[in-house]
Amino acid sequence: MTDWLLAHEPTVRLSVFLGVFAAVAAWEALAPRRALAVGRWARWPNNIGVVVLNTVVARLLFPAGAVGIAAWATGRNVGLFNVLDMPPGLEIAVAFLLLDLAIYLQHRVFHAVPALWRLHRMHHADLGFDVTTGARFHPIEIVLSMIIKAALVAALGAPIAAVILFEVVLNGTAMFNHANAGLPPMVERVVRLFVVTPDMHRVHHSVVRTETDSNFGFCLPWWDRLFRTYRAQPAAGHGGMTIGIASFRDPADLRLDKMLIQPFRDGA
Figure (cartoon, helix red, strand yellow):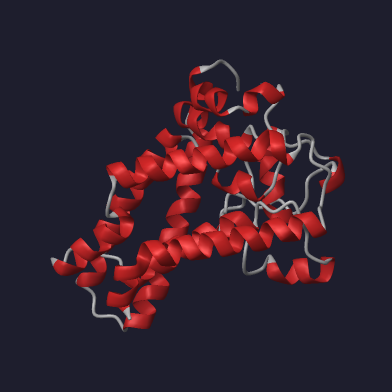
């Protein structure tokens, strides 16, 4: 099974991406949670454009990706899991948890360090909040994240299956929890105990900085509760909250060229 996943990893990831994207986009269209301040036609071409650019950059600089690092570590018995004698299923589960924890901690660091926040704020400067926001990251942040992930995968000696599973799940949940949609209240209360929901993550995209610096999780919601960065609801409510960053409210800033130079512009 691992050999098959390794051979077909790009196809699996692309298929899941397209499937989840289509499903979430349809959900948003049928039951939007909020009226978008700036419509899809002004945002989607630019957000999707940066996704394409990031994909090209990542494949050029890291052709094998994190999965290739996992295969290298496995082949050379490098890393923690290649030293420990753990059942394969437990190994995959623990590796997945550690990778998700690392993403949570990295996210907090990108908010706390001013130079890194300049890169990450492009993700927050979207004046809307929908499925495309989940993949709107500056190329330099993507490169730094890939270096951190590669180092962690090598240090852990993470199983190939765990890395593929994590990459696919993280990609899918990032689109899900950025959906401009909401679950029924009773369902929402249960689901957010296990997965970061759109209502939980939307708080993180508030223009209010204390709310921006909360709910850092992308996939699992437990780290925010454990490290006390969890905020249940925005103060103004989901209908009244303002999305984005105070310094970048001009719709012209949503253009791809403006997005790419944003880290080098003034603004908090």
